[in-house]
Length: 285
Length: 338
Image 1: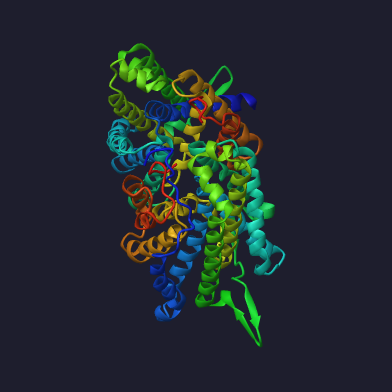
Image 2: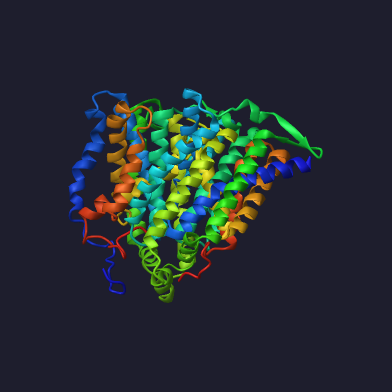
């Protein structure tokens, strides 16, 4: 039983890492807490669902459409956030709370409050690998998540742009002094974040019901993993994702499916209680 | 305004200008007559008044500088405590509603244990996550809370005997309206007292400059705890009233994002550095939503609240009433939410 828990924990956890990746990047570069992050994810899921259901478009082809939509929304968000005054973290929190309400109601209007899920019959079949049962859905989720995480890692570590992003995350002022276009990096962070959301959203729609208020859970998951890892540390993000995924899988097995949602909240509260000065690690006055 | 300069004026200022509110109060007092027998209008304003009390309660904590994204925890626990006590044990709602407040205080103590070292955005995030605990517990503890089915057929608001008559306030929309109006005015008076007392001054000092307040001998943590407990107490009482007013509650509803967002939106739009601003915003925005936007957009009408909060933060950081009463009120250090 525990191998099943471990496998589903790692599958789920890798997906959660993918979910958290965009949040961590946007937060690290721009210091904005985007509480509407989960709503964007659900929006991307709805776009994929709608294309898949109405036009019968294959799931793989819905990713570009979802990315285009999230890219448009994220660039608008970036304009909005860049107009905020200090303290960025608090102001962005309240504004994005408003955005979350706006998006939830928009989705309620366009997609109604019904629970929806993208069901691809093939993904429910499975195969055995060394006595371990894995459904194609789980395998796809795991493989796609790890692939995207790896690509992001390469981008951050081995390209000039990634260097600029990392420098901005580490120290905005010094980065600006070194000639890095810090506000440009902010736009870039939102754009990369949008692509990551656009990739994660349709996958979210395959493993989780879509409904207008489903985003809060995803937001909590993203924040929890980001706070666990600290910004700019992709490997710690993976570890955080796996721990959360494992905790949720264990909760499902030991307590029942409805207790799963408690895990991210408990992990977040515990992390904050232990690290009251937050992710950036600096002592605030 | 530059830092270090004494930017704050206490709320002791004479209440000129607040006289403008008297006609509004008069309208509220005779509203059942004006409503012309329309139960719907009365119900909307009863609800608006109840949300106003939630916003007032939320602001007791906010005045100390802590923004909460999780007041649904207090509201929901209050609603469930009052509902279960009256449903399972048949206790009169005169007793269950105060118990609702006390249960919310117990939740606040638990929240304090986890969150007392947190400030600003991190405090807000912790409160957002904290709501999940009572929500999931209520949802799953079927034996005690009846789980996701919710509580149906709750008794109405309490009545009282007066001479030979028995006034059953829950029986008519008018009775419920006056009950909530009475509670609202009582809470407003209490909040005014709190904000103008030394406690209120200490809380504002903590918000403006915690280190300086500490240096002046204000016991920062004790006052922050007191603000949280008072805020939770009244949020819980409001939750208890809600349970008996609506007479049906379920976990997704009372612990939903709605009841965490609503007090924050009303308080910030109305002016969270003012006493009455949060209540005014509730009395304007909620009827606006119900009378204008709900008929136009049955699904998704609450987008109004999202738009309003974004516009407020961008263009009117001290809130509507705060802007109107500038100079009479505690001014804001940075001109933004903190």
